[in-house]
Length: 249
Image 1 (cartoon, rainbow, N blue to C red):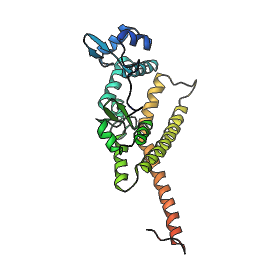
Image 2: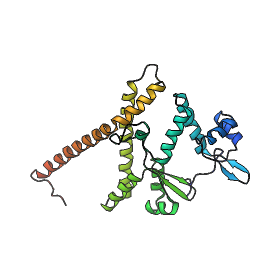
Image 3: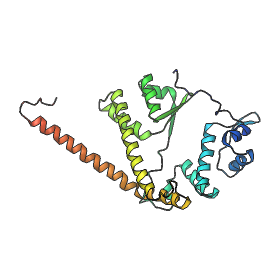
Image 4: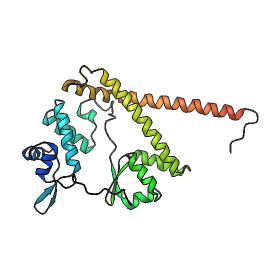
């Protein structure tokens, strides 16, 4: 599958000293993060531990949280919640009535062969799924990043939609969702913006507000979509009722 398997890069095989140089930290800092459970262990080959891109991303995330005023204990709690699939609403004490839209679906890992079969063994379809951030390919394994959308795609396929139509729908949906998400995040940030970057307290309040409003946000999208679907369907039905209109097949 040319061009799709992830090739090993310089970020996939780093010693602790190389990781320190790559992230601007010290080896001592990195070992401390591991001891405190903030950073997962490296891959051991003999007596040498090798770090990869996931360690870099994790350290960058830790750095951002620290810059926003979160303590190491708080960061450990947030990262543990993220790793175990616990909603941030539970971490922040918001409660079950306010499910957090920041909680991601649990990823699903499958074999590359199974994924290729599911995508009709079409190279363009596999590349499209990767580009849309629906899946990532790691050697002979594939991580499904959005299992819910894949299941919805299967339902559309059963209904008779082509793979091309399903992926076009997924692209349009992703673009629309990105625009909506960007709009809401910008509106929420505007409530805290003084110098362009919220402080520690504001950042926590912003996160809590987003989690608190998430049911309203998702309901607003659902309500608007249902209204639009009904309006467009009504237009189609009225057109079909006109004299001389072709009968539906």
